[in-house]
Length: 191
Image 1: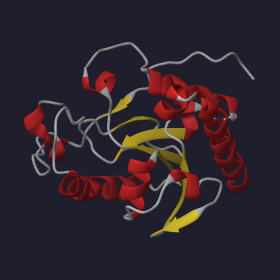
Image 2 (image 1 turned 90 degrees about the vertical axis):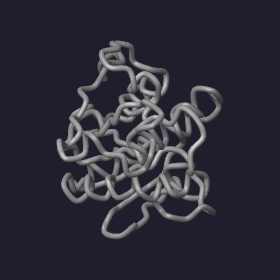
Image 3 (image 1 turned 120 degrees about the vertical axis):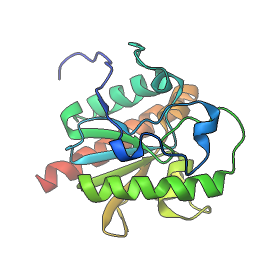
């Protein structure tokens, strides 16, 4: 394996019909809409809860800690950036309080449209917020879902620890890497 070096992945432009979307109300907080990053034709879609501060600032060449940890874990698992696309439940970064249930329900429609268009072979939900929103069940958590494949609608989905959690609690990093190895093994089987 080559030496790991984190990098800023190309941002996928927001569809022109949604650039001025005001449905969920997060536009009032001033954050910009971010559709996703990486390869839109990738076989693996990674879903996070929402973009971070780095993604919200245009033109920032820095790779945030969440992305560094995610890229390192996927690299160590043998996945390439060509195989990965990162997107979000919420397409804007919340910067203050908001109606979580209502906002996530509205924003899930954008994600479902994305899924229909991109049709990834595998989906990985990172963290409990993404898991609960995508599975539409507030009782679920990563710990109970990781290491197994689940059918959600027509999609093959697994769960993994959030890279930020693995960064803050280094004992979780080996589990995140293991989760990415689980995904890498499945994509090799499919291909």
